[in-house]
Structures are given as C-alpha cells and as structure tokens.
Length: 291
Image (cartoon, rainbow, N blue to C red; front, side, top):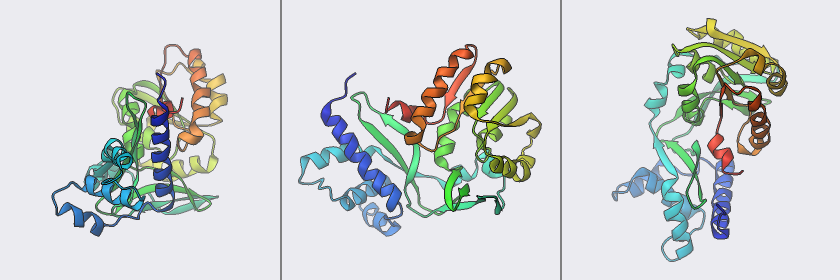
C-alpha cells in the first residue's frame, strides 16, 4: 500500500523529535514533572507524553496539527515499565556481571535513571503506514549489563533486548544457531529450554568471546549445550550453515535499524540455502518499516 505523503511527513517529524530527545537528553523529564500531572487523575504515561510534547514546543490545545500528532503518536508511544518484572528475568537472576576490562572492551553495569526514556520494543506500524516508536521508562533506577567499546556503549541487555527477543526465544527448538554473541542473553535463554538440543553461536570479536567464556558462560546451568565459533557471520552463513542443518537460526548482528537493513537483506538471501530451517531476525518488524 502506498503511504500518504502527509503520513510520511508526520512519521519523519515524530522520529526526528524522538531521535534528538533520546540521543541528547533522555533524562530530561523528572519525577516531579510527572507527579504534578498524575495528581489530577491522568496516567504516568499520559503525563510523560504531555510533558514531552510541551518541551518539543507542540501546542496540543490550540493547534489542530499538533493535537493530531499527540493523539495518534504520543498517546500510544510511552510505557511505564516495572523494574521487578525485569529483575526477575532468568538471565538477571542467574548471571552476575563483574566489572572487568579486556582489550578495548569494558564489562560492567550501566543504569537508567528514574524517568529516563529508552526504546523498549519494535516500532508499531499502523494500517495507514504510520510508525509509532515504543518508548519505556521506569519510576526507579534500573541497572543493566553492558559492554563498552572505547568508553561507548556497544552491547547491552536492556528491556528492549528482552522484549524484542521473546519471540525468537519462544520459537527456538532442536539445533539452534545464532549470529552475534553479545553478553549471551539469547544463548542463555535458549539453552534453558528442554526442547533445545544445542546452541551454536557465531561471533567475530575475540575480546567479546573471551569475556563471555571467562566470566559469563561458567554461570550457565546448561553450558554443555553452548558452542562458540569465532568467524565472520556472512562467511559462515555462506559456507557452513546449510551443511550443519540447523533447525532454527536467529540473527542479531546490528545495533539498530540504521545499520541493520543491509545486513538483514544480505542474510535473508542466504535463507534459500537452508529450506528446512526456520529463521528469525532481531528487531525485524522495525526493519520492515523501512523496506
């Protein structure tokens, strides 16, 4: 379906505003801002949305166009998340991350401040082509595991990773292959499944593999199921994947949509070599919004 020009313009405007906010001032909103509005009977999510659009300079009272943006996008964008729900996640419960440095990589915990905003799920695409980002926040501080490369966050296990991997974890069975190791969240969750025989992880970065093998894998209860192969994902996919006859393949090689589209399309082409294998891709629904 051809997307209306006005819809494209609205999508662009909303994403530009949110990108600037998330990249430059995700902790702009504070608890006092939300409390001041919640006392009048609105939800924390609604209070968050109203506070943010005001900061953006949108007039949702007297300007019809701004009010439409608020009703369509911002009212459906924000989600107050429960810290306890994520702290009870099996990986968080069983895997403890030390603070260590190997090569250029730092393994440590990072934190979301109370009411700091972050992407928490795939983009929702409406029937008319409108694309609504999904943004979460906590009312309390939340710590999450991270790998920093040269001081910049490179890999994490945040609510976004947890939510956007749920389907791929649920669907995995038999002999599983995953491209991209990270902090081993996917490998851990899949290894815990009784219907998973083995999990092979293809990872190119030797420092990440070393961090995982030394500090994280020993904490896996089902570590005997896990095999790490140091290799380029696309070379392995081209030359080895079909031979191994995996039942399920999950690809998680990109940081976000912007660097993921080309890799996604490249890996999709290789599916034809393994016709009996089921494939899943990280944040695929968000990537498809741009294709």
